[in-house]
Amino acid sequence: MKKSLHLIFNNYILIADAAVFIAACIFIPNFTKPGNLYTLLQNICVYGIVALGTMLIMITGTIDFSVGFLVANVSIVACLSINRFGFITGLIFSFVFGCIISIFNGAMINRLKINPLIITLGTMMILRGIGTAICNAADVICLDPALASLFTCSIGGIIPLSLICLAIVFFLVVILLKRTVTGTNLFVIGTNYYIGHINGILVERVRIFVFLLAGIFYSIGGLFWASRMNSGSISIGDNLMLLILSSCVIGGTKISGGKGNPLSVLLGVFLIQTINNMMSLLALPVSLQMLITGVVLIISLSVERLLRPKYKRRGIG
Figure 1 (cartoon, helix red, strand yellow):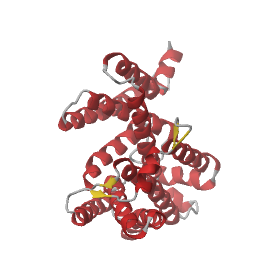
Figure 2 (cartoon, helix red, strand yellow):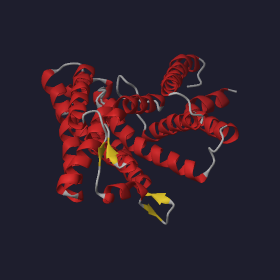
Figure 3 (cartoon, one colour):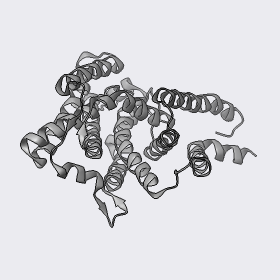
Figure 4 (cartoon, one colour):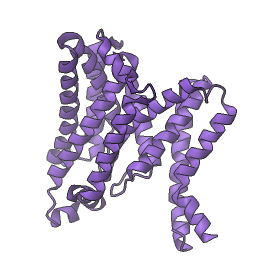
């Protein structure tokens, strides 16, 4: 009995994913159509890449509320720069922009020693204002068809480019966390910032590195988003932030830092995106979709917080 409870608890995300997916296959019309499943896969890949960047930041005990509008602004910068300077130059500008803004967050947290929540909330509002001013609350259309090809490009018409990028990002993150000293330092810093300093870890440099890496992942996500819509839009910012942070938290990443698993985060992304896909197929209002996503997040956190101490007392966890 104890072994069964232990197995269920430690794999509750996987079990939830399987249950939701099976329920969708049975009860949601058109869910199992190849076109819909392919779209779901694409969404999981794009959101997964961004979520892995956010996870790295959260492991260090920091949180990034600007992720949604940073990705949104990357999509806008991509369309504007590609229209003006060409495809390759536009891609470079997009990556530079994403990395600079992300590094700015890390540098401000290092320099001002202010709660990261305040810094990234401020950056979020700045990015929201800049994006709205640039595109005048309207989508920026990309005139170069090469951008759209990023989202439609695939190997053999089956394996999308976004899946290949997610696989590369995933294995890089796994190697970083499991095989490098820097990866170990991330967990140490997240567990106790001051112990990291005492042990000689260059905490501020590590934080800048993490924000740089996250900025690269955010830029990839922003480019895929722009490619999918063939436009850049500031309107995706709020919803994107909620979905990314929810995926990380549901995937077991601690907001306080010191804990995070790439595979669990991707399972969290799978759960959130599958539920979103189901709600879209049912044509539920956006307000109701946000409400349901919030409920799923609260339930997931409640299960983790309430059951783990109970299992530990029983010698199960």
